[in-house]
Image 1 (spheres, helix red, strand yellow):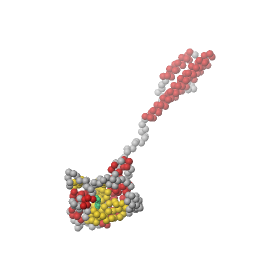
Image 2 (cartoon, rainbow, N blue to C red):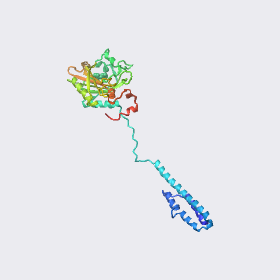
Image 3 (spheres, protein in one colour):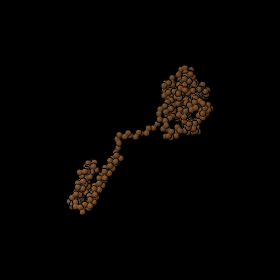
Image 4 (cartoon, rainbow, N blue to C red):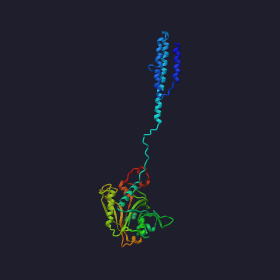
Length: 344
Ligand code: PHE
């Protein structure tokens, strides 16, 4: 029996120091010590050689040894499970798709401006641009608004304090003058851009906004051409069902002049607070180019005639997307801007 006890002490030492290169270390241990042909079983076999009076004591030693081996086995299993789990936690799954880069979206004013431009481009209009700081001649005088003309009050102008002849343009008509001065005819242009007026900021007005103006000058241009062009534009922009009407109006640069209304898209012409219960909303001003303008730009008004029109992009965008407050366009609130993701 002494031999066996010595053996057990030796085994215990072995068990404490047990290691294996096998990644299934717990199973290797189990087979060696706890298996049917393992160490524990063979030590148990010694029981029959133990004298009766010692059986009880030996039994206790054996049980304690078995428990010792079982605890070690348990510890080995837990450590491999933990090791496996920790490999899972810290490893990188290369098959996972990456995080998509957040994409910005186009500003609604840009979307609508691009749409307006593409419609007129299909009719042969070219885009022309010009300065936002303009002199009196190009913003007013050449457009048939001499210095003391009362219509200058229609557009509250921001003047540049260093030079009373300079101002922030109140419309993109300045670009039309610059194109006419180049003297290359015929002219068929649209002029998108930012304009400035000294207005109190509210849901319906701002001190800057965006316009697209158009100009067509050639021989024999008539009001019918103007109407046809604008009809085409409105149907392409708002759909075939929208209704259109012209109202006589006044602009110093055109004669005759008109304003164009479309049937209200919000209430379908039935009357709401957007259209002020009329069923119609005004979207642009237009008319036949005043002969004085042609002469101011050295174009023979007996030979050439033309039409012009101008619209506010904000107004069209508000109708298109049913936006009720114009200030949203310049506040840069992402919650507002991110809603306009696709081209129109
Ligand atoms: N320039 C005008 C405005 O800013 C718009 C317009 C352009 C009207 C051309 C008629 C013809 O209000």
